[in-house]
Every structure is written in C-alpha cells, then in structure tokens.
Image (cartoon, rainbow, N blue to C red; front, side, top):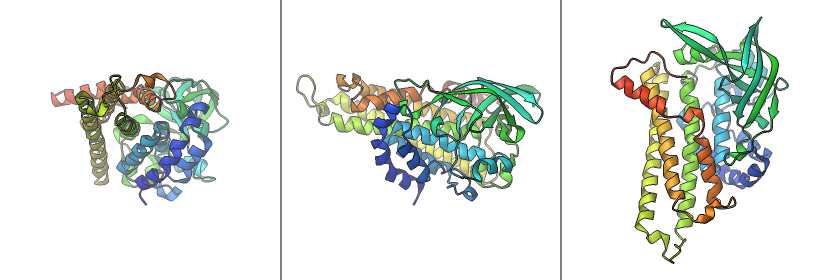
Length: 388
C-alpha cells in the first residue's frame, strides 16, 4: 500500500479529531498516534530505522491528502515528517541516541535563529526563546536554528546557521498558542536556559546549501538523502496549504450547491459563482501539478548523481510558494461568495479558512525573494548560492 493510500485510510479519523484539536490547541493524542502508527509521519525516515524512505513526491501527496481532511493534521504531518529525514543526515551517534530505544521518536522544530548559541568545548551552550514549534507537545526533543558566526564561501562572508538537537529535559514549552487559525498544530514557544548541545547533535545549513557530504549519508545513501534541505522543508509547507485548500474547495462546493441567495435564487445558478469555482479549481490543479513535477524532477536529478543549481532552487521554490499564495488568494474569493454565517466559529468553512490564512504567514512560504532571484538569473544576475 502506498503512503497516499494510507493517508486516505486515516484521513476520516483525523477529520473526526479536528474539533478536539481546536479545543486543546494541539494535536490530540489519538490523532498523533494515528500519524505515527500508520507510518505517515515516518514516511521519509531511513528504511534501516523502520521508516518508509519514500520519494518526496509520494510524501507530499500524503500530506495533501491528510490536509484535505484536516488542515492542522496535514501541517503537523508535513513539518514533523521532515525531521526523520533531517536526522538521517546527522552522524550515526545522533541517530542512535534518538532511535536506538524507539525508532518512532520524532523531534519538533523551530529554525528561525532567535536564540543564542555560544561556542564551548565540544559543542554549544544554547539559550533563548524560539516560536512556532508545531507539534512540540508530541515531540521527543526539538531541532532549533542558531546563528554560529560566519564562513567564507567563494570569497563571500556568509552567516552560518546550524540546526541543534536538544533532548527532552533540556528545554521547556511555553503554552502560549492562542490563535484564530492553525489552533490544533500546537505551535508553541520553546524556551532554553543554557543547555549544552554536543557537536554531533548539530548540523550546518551551509553544508546543506553547498551540497557538501553529510555524516548520515554514509549509511543513508539513497537519493532521498541527497535532496536539498531548503526544498524539502519548503515543499512540505506548500503541500500542507494545497491540501487544506482542496478540502476547503470541496466543502464550499458541497454547501454552495444547495444554498440560495437572499432573493431565493439557487447559488449554483449564479454565473459569477460558477466562474469563481472554475478559476479556483484551475489554480489549485496547476499548483499541485507544479509541486509534483518539481519534486519528481529534483528527486530524479539527485538520483542520477546531479545537484540542483541556485537557479533551479530559486525557480522551484518560487513555484511552490507562489502556488500556495495564489491558491490562498483564490480561496478568499470563494469565502467572499459564501454565507455571512461563515463569521461564526462553528460554521464548517470558518476553521478551514482561518487555517489556510494562518499557514501563509510562515516565513518559508514567502514567495517574493525566490521570484526575484529566479527572474534575476534569467536576466543574467549570477546566483552564487541558493538561499537557506
């Protein structure tokens, strides 16, 4: 059974947990258990640790299928599902620490370097606060982004960002996630006070960008583990948005097909309503197709021993983010052609709409820099290194 088939099987159950997730402001335990025991959230974990090690395109389809039923579950699946892949690039010692006792352990993350990391003997001393750690209540540890100085690359001095892995007991969760959208993702703050992180639990993002050999690739040598980090993380976020949008459009269509205007005219008879649905469907289909195409092409490229150029990464990240952006805008047009009752928080469309709009706030879904970089490269501006 493919990962997408598994996603279709569990999606109805995840939908049933959506109300509870909103009340808890995190993923319900039963929903998280479904993601783990079904193998979905371990879809990109190395096979030698019991994971699926599936191609990226297959994982993205699974994320979209889950997000279609439950936007927050799709988001948590996408974000948390990247972490077993990233851990597969860490030294074997780190993988053993995380998975030898239980290969189902998965950390949460917050990559924006808002805290501090001081270089000390054998590693880093980490302190500070990091926000938006989706799924952290169910995370075994947390992956945090820290700035650790700079490195000279091709005569340019570039800031160096590292992921540092903290284990349970080294951090606290601040339950401050009170939001209008994405409530069930539980994207709370992580607070750290002087935790020591040894070198083997850290990984440079410049190494990811430059395509340098990574320790985990010695044992995890499949094409999945030669994919660019920025592409992997970006694509799962875009897939979450597209899945949530697909679910919104389907629900809107169902409700609108039987709704009447204030003058008693069936909404399905309104030409402009039909036009809006046609336009949204086209944009959604186009964004999904581009995401599938680009993910398959990158996978095939690295499987053949190639590496994405900065121009390619700018182009495909522009595709993913602009696709999510125009789909979210298109959803807005349908929302405006809905009943005024969508203002009520118990209306079926309200939560889905709020979730989609909140998702677009993630900094990694910002489309403009990648569009400018891609267009610049077409006009002759040299891109020496792909953005993080």
